[in-house]
Length: 348
Ligand code: F0G
Image 1 (cartoon, rainbow, N blue to C red):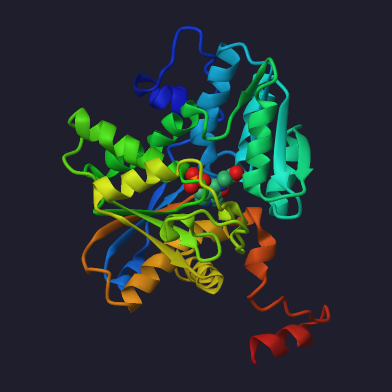
Image 2: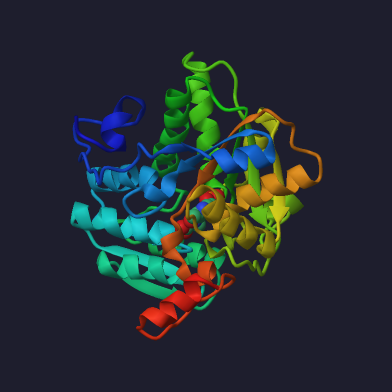
């Protein structure tokens, strides 16, 4: 069997005989049970480990479809704005499709691993003096040029492909979890999960929708505040967004599922990142750890009912942003290359 979203879920996607069947074997990521954190939180916690996608984030699920449809519809190039992961993914799929890719990044605010990815895949990288929201406005202007397709989540194929994560979780568990929690930036992914669960409910594959719990960083929390944020700021650069494009869809997703939005501080995010890695062995980038920070906060405040089955989406790989991860852990112990020096450390 061929691997990848267009193969595994092609029957639920708008493919035609002319859609190029692109694949980097994206999707089919692990749903890992987190034993230690489950015990601590008093719930049954699973991590949907989407950082194991080919470019290290969930973006590949929708990008494969967006780039395939762009090629089918005659695009000669793709363009996007990004906080890093979308650009890495767009660049990779444009490379396999054989078309140029232009990416607009907020200058100085993209994790090094993500920047390296866009460059090595061969994208034309533009560092915009301004934040992501401004870069997206510019990308939309660029996409008005003849032959350009925008592959941000304003492109409906992106969210369509991202529904596959909801389907995988239901297919694996047999039923949806009680809660699904994930980070919210431009608010596309939470909307895609909702659409994915709704689709499964409509076709009888599941009976109820999980509560969707969207977590933002305090300095970039327009969904929690209910208003845009002009100068978003957070260590979780992936979700450093003040004007989410899919705000309305995300609001609806939370309303119809009986879920909620909540905000966590940068310290809480970095603590959760460390705890996830050191207690359950999974390394996710800061944005991806906002949901765990949210669960720990709800637990502290007595708002986390025990016994729930919760799926938490680890949207991006920790290796993308080593600076954030190493900022608060002890550094390596340097020793002389001698047996004595080694023994001194082992016995201290
Ligand atoms: N987690 C990670 C690792 C992300 O890269 C993003 C978004 C999100 C969560 C939030 O998802 O925007 O659908 O609400 N990254 C975009 C990018 C903005 O350009 O890579 P969302």
